[in-house]
Image (cartoon, rainbow, N blue to C red; front, side):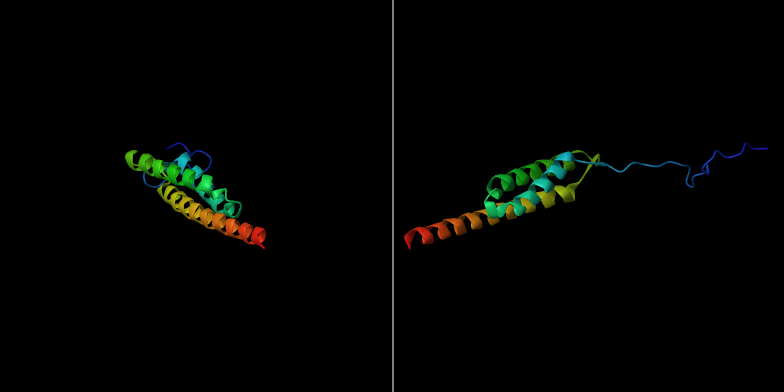
Length: 109
């Protein structure tokens, strides 16, 4: 007679072999967060600093993910951070030009 199964079921279909998903690269997460902040802060022209930082982190993270051979995940986060960083940078440049134009029009009248 076989022993009783352990508490909680005990039997896993497929032999019980389970694989962990690849861990997400921390630099990809940082790139995404910095890219979002560059968009949020573009009106006060902080995106000029945060945008390139997000784009560089996303670019480096994307390279690390592709060279890891599947051990690292988060490629979409890295690309998202890279794109948001570029957009935040461009939006901050537009905001800077707007503020310069607004300041000039106030001082000349």
